[in-house]
Structures are given as structure tokens and as C-alpha cells.
Amino acid sequence: MDFHPITDFTVKVHSRCNLNCDYYYEYNQGNSGWTRKPKFMSMPVFRRLCERIAEHFAANDQIEEPFISFHGGEPLMRPPEFFDEAMTLAREIIPKVRFGLQTNGTLLQPEFVDVFLKHGLRAGVSLDGPEVINDRHRVDHQGRGSFQRLRRGLKHLRHARGRDAWGGL
Image (cartoon, rainbow, N blue to C red; front, top):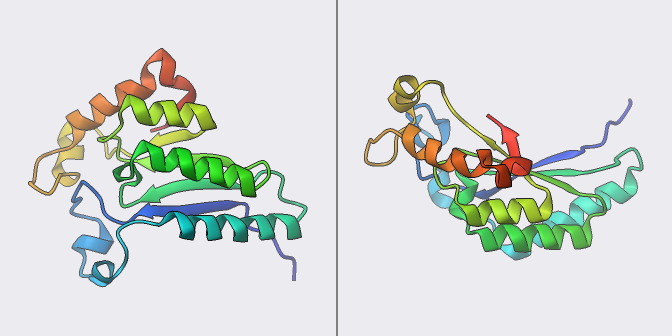
């Protein structure tokens, strides 16, 4: 049997979300397991994850550039300093690592973009469609739509300074 080594790692750094999308399986479709899990990944756990990725990288010379994608819940519920520390640590442990992130965009601020640019991270932003469709399902915990907050966050990636951190919609 041929073995294809894992090259991309999706890392859930925060399990909670600032939105309460009605279709989200973990919180709104009867799964209560999340209530017993940690809210966020600690730095010691992230360090161990990086060590294991580095072991895998070293054992599989077909991997040229491992890729870590930060996810959640909503990963930007972690502060910019977390991402700076995490990516600095990952680079110390994993040769040639690249980074991405998937966000709902509502918490994007210039401080995040600065860290993303420093580490070459590209951020993808999730959207369900035009405002009327997006806000039907992607609401906050008070039931308010998220489209306008997402739009404000996107400005930080669409501005000339943030374009190199733009990973798509």
C-alpha cells in the first residue's frame, strides 16, 4: 500500500465562536461534547503538535513545505500575540512551515494583519453570500447579522497594506 504523508494540518486554536450560525453542527445540531472540551489550545499543546509535525516532516522526505491552517470556532478569538508566538515557535521547530487561517472576518483588526504579514500567513474569510442570505444564518449570540462586521474586517485585508495577507473569500 502506498503511503501519502500528511502535508496540511488544520489546527483548532479556539473552540468557541463569536457567531452562532444556525447550521453549525457542533453547537446547534444536538452535539454537546464541546461543553467538556478546552476553549482554546494552550501553547504547550501547540509546541507538542509542532514537535510531532516536525517528526513527521523528518520521516517523510516527500514533504517540501508543511502547512498549518489555524481554525476554530473562530481563531481570532485568540489575540494577535498568540499567533505571533505560535508562528515564531512553529518556525523554530518545523523547517519550511507555511501558514494560513480561516476566519469569519468579524474580528479582523490591523494588529492581526501586522502579525499575518510578519509571518507570511494568508487569511481566508468565510461568507455565506449577499447580506440578506449571510445574515439569515450567520448571526451573533444576540441574533444580529454579521455581514456588516465582516465587511469592516475585510477592509483590513483589502487595504494595500493587507493584501499580501489576503487568502480569499
